[in-house]
Image 1 (cartoon, one colour):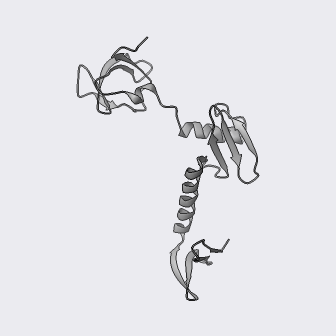
Image 2 (image 1 turned 30 degrees about the vertical axis):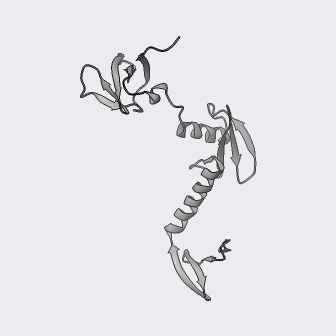
Image 3 (image 1 turned 90 degrees about the vertical axis):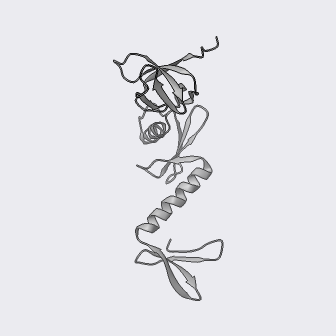
Length: 169
């Protein structure tokens, strides 16, 4: 598409030099060009994807993923084909798209909701012991050495368990 009349009546024309122009009294007026056109296209597509609740795979942008209750609906916009996938096993391109969605949207961990004044034991590695940390703001601070602290959503946290206040049975 190289000419388009927008709903507001503005005529948009993309000429051979990749410049967006708008018609003004029969005279084209340059508005933007080159890489800005592609950036604008991607921006508006991303904005629309967000409005429609879909996620677009950056490696293969013709694939969009819709999150269901327990399943992902993967749609190939070029063919209209849609398949359901869980995102755990990538045995085809739709499975790859679903796995990419899961990677981009990791499940929140229980410690991401840690509240101030709680105490958690935390492990940050397979050989790491569990040490007590108290929550201050959005940080875990080591009980015995307040210089050791990190964000509650630190990706290096592998496991954590709240020890205070005690969990209700």
